[in-house]
Length: 55
Image (cartoon, rainbow, N blue to C red; front, side, top):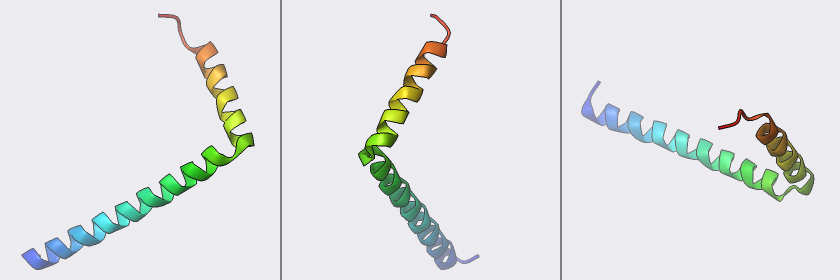
């Protein structure tokens, strides 16, 4: 693999990861804005906290 090909591959892979991160952030923002989902998330967090081992 030439240096140019390695650089091109690194750029393409980085761009793909960035787009994936943007999509994930967008989905998280949508879920955070959803009142029903936020209520469920808080309920699950309370259950998990109650199940946590002491100490």
